[in-house]
Image 1 (cartoon, rainbow over the protein chains, first blue to last red):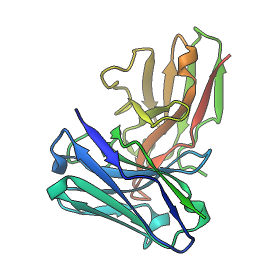
Image 2 (cartoon, rainbow over the protein chains, first blue to last red):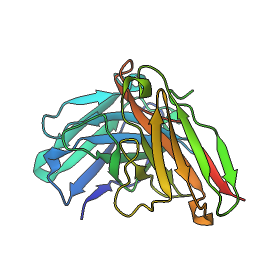
Image 3 (cartoon, chains in turn green, purple):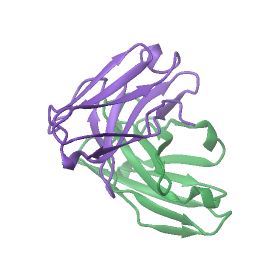
Image 4 (cartoon, each protein chain N blue to C red):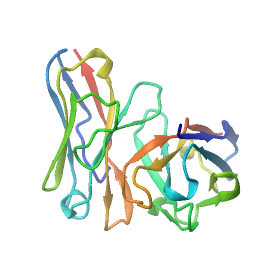
Length: 121
Length: 111
C-alpha cells in the first residue's frame, strides 16, 4: 500500500528555519513527483512547490523563491522541504503529496502525507 | 486572492444536487490544463475526488462528477448526504505562473 509519512510537529522562533521530511513507501520512489502544500489555520490549500525525485529538479511557487529548498534522499525514499526565515504567517500544516501521473508535475495529487504542524511563535 | 475562483459556500437539502464552480482564465483552465478536485472533511487530510476533469479514483462514489468547459470547471454532487459536508478545492496548472494553483475552497453544507 502506498504511504507518505511525515515528520512530527515543530515549534520555531521567528527567523529560524524548519525542515520537514516525507518518507514514501509502497511504490517506486523515483517514478512520481512529490508536491508540498500548506494550509494555514482556517485557510485554504496553498501550493509551495514540487520535487522530481528522479532528477532532484525542483520548482517552487513565486512567493517562496529564495526561502524554500526541496531535496531528496533516494536511498531512503525520503523528500525534504526546508523553509527559511520563518514568520508568524508561516504557521500552518504542511503536507507532502504524490503526483497522480508518473513523471508528470502538473497533475493531481493522489496520496497525501498526514501533515506536519509548524508553529512559528 | 486565488487564481482559481470558487464560491465560498454552497448548500442543499439531503438528496439534492449541488454544484461547485471553479473559474480560471486563459493561462490555466482555458489553456487546456486539467482540473482536479479534492474533498477535505473537517480535521482530515485532503482526498483526491476527481482527476483530469472528470475521472474518479477507485472508491469515490459516482455521486461525484466533474466537468470542464472553456475557462471553467464544475464539481457536481448528486444525492447530497450529511457525510458530504466538507471543504472542496479545485486545482490546475497556470502557465503564466509556472505553478500549480488551487481554488480558494468551497464549504458544502447539507441543510
